[in-house]
Image (cartoon, rainbow, N blue to C red; front, side):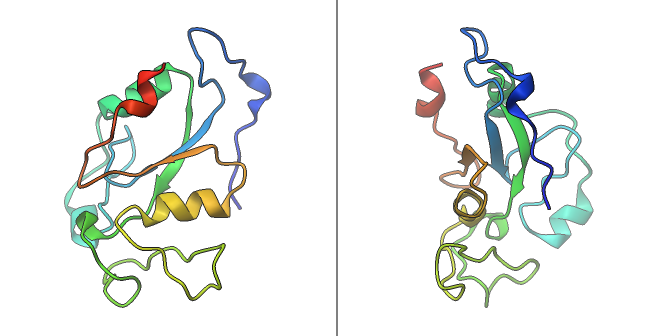
Length: 140
C-alpha cells in the first residue's frame, strides 16, 4: 500500500502551477533527508541521507509538486538486463506486460511506476547518471 497525498489541499495558481501534482524521481536524484542509493548496496551503506535537494527537485517543489517517492534504476545507471544482472536489487516488473517482460534501461522504475500507479502524474528518469532535461520545466 502507498499513502497517496490528497489533492484536496492544493489549488494550482500562477505561482504554483504544479500544486498537488504527484511526482516520483529516479534514485540518482538527491532528495533531502533520503538516501540516494543508485540501486547499489555498497553505495547505500557508504553514504548517509542527503543534506539538501537537487536543484531540479527544488524547482519542482517551488512550483507546488509533491514528491511521493524514489524509483529504482539499474545500478549506477548502467545498461544491465534485468533481472539476471541486477545483483543488489531486483528490477521492477512490467505491470502492463505479461509479468515476464522486463522493463529495460536505467530508468526502469520511472516507467514501471507510471504504468503501475494510475494516481501518479509524473515520474522523472535521467539520460545518464544525472542529466535531467529542462524542457519540461521550461514552460513553468
